[in-house]
Length: 265
Length: 283
Image 1 (cartoon, rainbow over the protein chains, first blue to last red):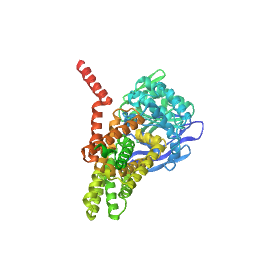
Image 2: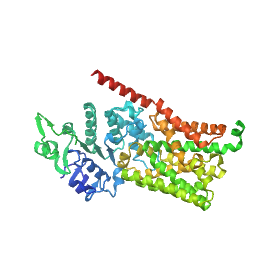
Image 3: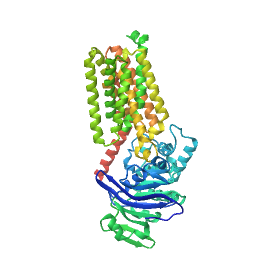
């Protein structure tokens, strides 16, 4: 499946299959994504969404298939690729009680781009401050990360990914457990990044907020059920096939409201 | 007794205690935050085996401890990256195997009792000039590695998954961090012995954690707690003429227990639990 864009594909995946021991987590995944695109991947629990992100990062080895990102082959050239990626993991996987300040977390995005033992410069601090400003958290620079609410912590993790000045942003459930205001901030920032030329791939379970901002949606349940423009594929038939339960799609003027699929995906 | 404490022969042991306290605080902070306490106990036990083999070969026991603990740290670092259950079993096996090796070699050596006892509970008053130089070199190497890779260590300690995804070679940093534990075990074996090394490594860092919201503060506080506990334990052991390692162990453990009682983090948690109970009752 291919989605149009202005230039060469940023992400190209052909016949990708990934297995954990003897169980297939992803089967025959093929898609291309070009620059300046915002793709949301949705699907039920265990559908392989996080595995797909990890395969793109070269963190899991495919059984079959070819992955090329920004012209590099993954996993063999994964370190070159990773230098150009901003990644936001699931917030729940991080122990929030670890003693770090917000600025430490955001500056980690700069550390990843540096060579061995090179110190952070004033420029790195400026980039980190700007990234924090983009998620409206600039007043929290010197605050302990542990003192923030879940939504604020999520914004800081996104700022860290932005501080890498990435060509490709990968986000694993960035909208999970955050309030509506934080969702708006996150989605606006991601949309702005996509408009600036960054390719954004977001895994999410919350369909409704992403309809407006995503260029493309991938419906995933171990294999790609459908991929295309949100309005073309978010219909009851394809969503019900993806979530293996009845899903209702209600058209409300320009808006689409989906119910029955907001089960954690 | 005061004269004994001020005697020039006490200088080397006191410097050894200070060096061990500083190294333990820095390595211990990363160990505590990354949950590597069990792994570090296995590594310190492997240094016991190395020291015992060196005794048989007539080499410096500290160099034997260094070689063996670095070797075992490589194995434990490798297994601790994979399946957690498997890693737990293998670390447990290394624990037992290295201790068995140590006992075997010490039983072959004629100096069994005195040497074994000095490895197990330390012999800080018997620190020679060569020992002290070895400790200082090992400590300097440790501090240089941490200073050079501090930012990278901080990143993998906070979020190893993102560090890997964003391009850090996390395996390499993990191996280095585990190697630092091996270096610490060499410093600790002479000062407090293999049994109490784990207390010196964990307790000051764990106590500092209770009062810290950033890593730099945790490191400084940990050094302060380790120095106060270590030097106080050393002085008291001279006054009361008892084993130095025992008093250092008791002092650092007490510091940790006191930190739990005074911890602002835990107080906050308790207040929150009380508040929630009150809200639930009111509802």
